[in-house]
Image (cartoon, rainbow, N blue to C red; front, side):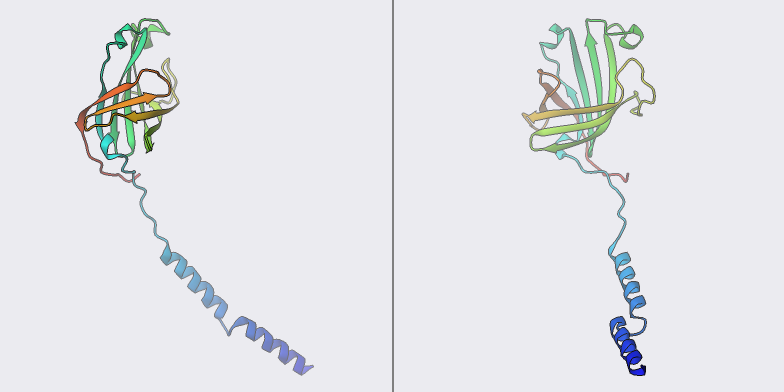
Length: 184
């Protein structure tokens, strides 16, 4: 009986790899996992270099013949965009307190990404200080998602073809800025 108990203890010792091995192994594993991880601050993305700055939509001869048209002002900073949409209409779309005799302005802020020739804008409608709207008024609120095909890139001219309009948007660079990513 004694021999059987000794054999059992010997086999258990061989499985445990010596005294304290399990504790040392887990302590080593824990130390290595802590040393391998580091928390990096989340930084704003750099975005596209050629887009950085303020861009104003050029007016076209066709615009004034349309019943409703918009004039856009884009500001790209790093991977973010700020959009001011001025709308002009000859038709009354709603309460005149909002539409101001056929003229109104909407604001959007968000982030963008570009893949090949497609510019993806995703954001939220905001107030005139680019703060997210908490209540809905008679202007649009909520999400803004738009895709543009970018063409005719030059140093100070862009042409965007949107999915929501057949008229391309010609943009002229007003002010070039750089990107200094900020922590989020």
